[in-house]
Length: 259
Ligand SMILES: [Zn+2]
Image 1: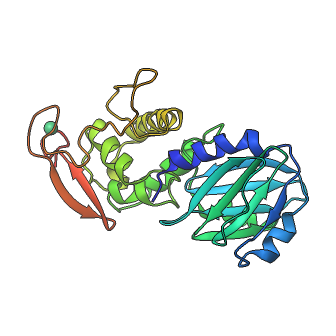
Image 2: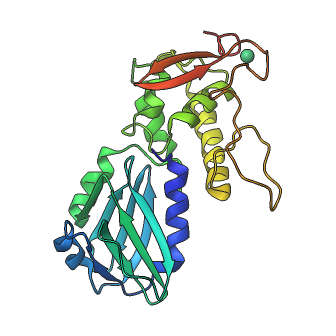
């Protein structure tokens, strides 16, 4: 499952390829033929990431909504591109580029009204411009659920995946089992700001980097974390504890996080 920064990066990478250009849309696989026809021949006016969702806006007011899920992939090519493979759910072609999407969990057209309802369903995106932390913080402060559960709840905040959840809680020295309503508001403000800057780093390097060691130009960019899937806490050298919370593995340092 891609974390939110990869979807923002995908949106950023595709904008110069599609936005402001007239798009030829087809469904080589056939399963999205009707949807492709709706946007075929229209100018793509924006590409937005909302949490793990991609929204391609078209001049007529429709949006193509993509959620890649576990198996979905986006392939980008320059024109002239090879003919699509028959597993491609949707192909979007501009004069300069071709985007093929295979195996998405969601591929649908949202009207302007659908989109309004869709936005109401999800918590604010960490990387939105401008960002709106207040809505997320209010939801956390109202809940008795553990903060580690709330951070992964896309109806509270959009975009935090499992690795970022572990890392931000450790960086903040926060007990993952603390109830949302017990976490002070200024702590949540700092959490939002810190998480936002970690995800901006994630978009820039297209990789999760939470330990402050930013790669130099030309260096291999791989994940750089503090305690996710690590054995010892880098601060106190205690053994890192492992548990499942919200059905996903959480790592924490009992000593540094006051558990
Ligand atoms: Zn520790």
